[in-house]
Length: 534
Image (cartoon, helix red, strand yellow):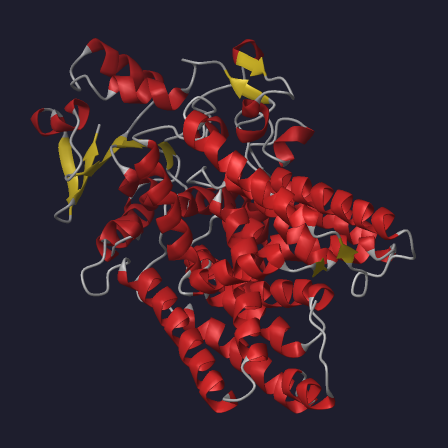
């Protein structure tokens, strides 16, 4: 929390209501404009899987992956967290808009919610509008948020934008506002039905609660989140020592602990730094300055201690290159906004120069985010494999018009999964375990299910219940694809699953599809995409 020392600074940091509405309105418009598509269709990999789940709910009216109550939260084999597929299906059915456009609108709404969530958290941390606004700008417009909320439906996006809102509710509870307890519980349940990374959100919530409790006991006076200070400078050196000791341990034993899973430790750490810099942008440098300021500040406020303590486990979690940045991103953007605000606050002589510098820095950060997200998606030589091409989409439309909905098919690449999502999920496609269970390719066999211990890492990263090794249907198909169509293994698989069509991506070769021209008829050929009839 920052305190203003004069009425002039109060005017500077807390402008008129009209100016506040103007700035927030411009931020909303900016977030919409940044998400205007530069590609013809949705992007990503997980996006098309979730798209197909939403199609299934719309087609059948029920979640066919629900086996028991744990399936709602994706905690049981053949199931997936249900919040996002149901939301998309409901939006599509209520509006009559096709699913692909619903996903685009949903992503824009998530981007706008990121403004609300980040600004809400800032209201309990900072006491002036400028600091709150800076954090909302940085959090909502940096590449970490923009990339996950630009026409790509991944459940990581919901966790990312709801994380600051969850912490906002927690800080309200810490201030003894009990009316927020129920909202916190509901939000946590919603996130549990969204992505398992909610465990990390709850972990940080518990950690901050403990920090607040110790902070209050240390003061031995009525708790006030914005006024209480902890005067013990020795803790600064204890903190620095702990962090350096942890860094040394990770550097020496990171591979044994499973934090570094491939390559050299140096390359892994460099990759982590690149991922963080890419997601946060130019404010990463400011966050380093703010971190140093927080560490050596003599009388720290609660929010400053909370951020510093949370950074310790974040240092460990950041080594997970798939999910670690979700927590790193929030705390680095918080530090970045603090660093930017300190630059403004401490330069009172050249206010116009400072204001121009801050505006330019924000513009450069937004430009980098937009350039990164849209450039790699096809503009100026980006990677077109990140999104569904027009050819793939047109192939899906042809399937919808020319192949009976009750037929079954297999594919040899990611393009088949995109086809399956684009044409609505009928005819069904042999794919992953969840889809195969939903579409009747496999039935539940509890003897193939293994229970994980709550004390194991797999319990949280995978599921409390998982399929035993070697029993997945996707693994079976990978094995079958190594045989030609005329082999006994292939014929048993095709006849046993009543496969009628083969969706062939000519850029992805395997022996099964490579043998199709000698024995099957081609009924569709668009160049890259071909369809063979059994």
